[in-house]
Length: 637
Image (cartoon, rainbow, N blue to C red; front, side):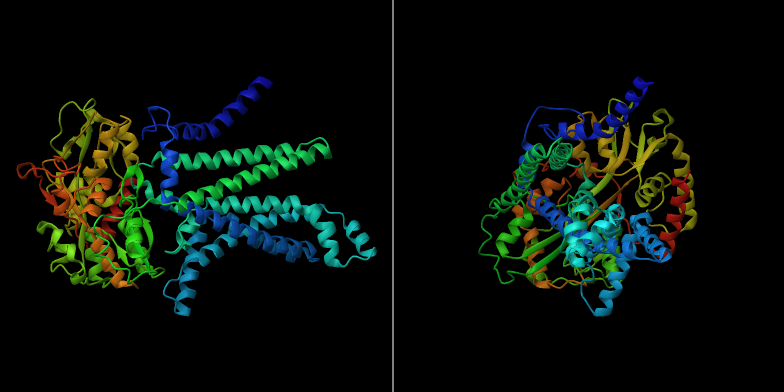
């Protein structure tokens, strides 16, 4: 029986810690893969410290966690004392029930409700930005206080009331008695509450997602935003450092608590103080390293960009992993712009057009530059949520290929400047698929049952079925959507799964035979798995153009024009195109002799190889609601 219990204990701990050990192991991998160890290297730790955006988010998380946990600990301790001194058990019971609600409540409910409160109050006060660092801090204090109270209150109940009375009999005032008698006894509870509050704050994503503004982004938000592409091992390096630091602190702390004598305990205290100082030095070192930024100047542009807007804060809202950020020796575009112009850029990211739209629509924050896709631009323009651009300030607009001007979502070239171009196609594993596919019909082929992936996205998934049926992506006929839905339901038995970002792991690891995805992302996957190939099915594919726009809520219009013009500079556009991996609408990039994708047959197919393409249009609300209802039926089976 003892052997069985030990085995179970071992398996539980192995299950808990194996992922962490693997993460630490692959943080030293010389390659990007999370499956194949290509050799020992510290390159990802070097990359970690050179990533200015990531370091800023880490700094923000630490500042927020320290501030919110300290304030919550003070308030929670005072609340615990107040509840402890209440004589009426019904009142104290009611207060404790209220205290438990934030802990029992799902985080998403708390986050949304707090956001609505902040937006309501901000609107009432006439504020331009309803959410910012202070709303985020209030939110974190709010959900931390209940945990502090629950840690301190039991310690108060364990205190000996006679000691307090004896202290007061000997001349102590009530305050002196509390701090000299009660505090030493409840300190373990206070410290436990503080540590729990710090951990919860540092780790929080959901509530922060809804209550943060443009001026402050935490580490969990940053990591969530970059999962548009596979997470780079520099994130493994960061979390390995955090995990190891926490492990060391816990080991030292337990060593002190278990010291057998006061003398030995004193020695252990010195050790834990030394350990704490080491942690502080490390954290300070990170920020010092962050301050030593490399020069990111772009040759020949100093004379063209004045510092007339120096000190201005520009809020840029873009897709995650959608701009060259200085990793892998690439150009750090944001830093280069800041150094050149003196403008401070708040670079915030989103994971979908719909999330970006909801943020703009809510009015909680203001943004100066956004980069949505074509159909969403059409929607924003139709709803009056975009400003016209001043092309007299965008001299580099001449670099845009004429093929990407006067498109359906901006017929008169008034609102947009194209940023990136992409197409959807079919990725397949040549060792698993018997012959090169030519049609989308292969995604219903029973020979590949359990090895087929498809989009976990209603519009993209429907698009494949619509092309098989010979429909338009933009049909408003309900019968067409019904037919496409029936076809997707027939596909369900042969699917391995519906995925989005997981397609990288599945296809790179050879765990699926085929998947529809974007051609630029295929190029990244092929670097990890040479067995992968790509085809544009004969029925046709979706093409999209993401473009830079200025929303109607923008506060720094002229600085936004300068930023858009900077993004069109040949060297900057080249860095972005190579980092993103999608096609560029900038002719200076396409014609650049050093462009790594210049002759890529998938990004820039020859005219005779160009597939039939169609854009997504913004559909009427009733059509959107109808196909979303059908999508729920499809995915629920």
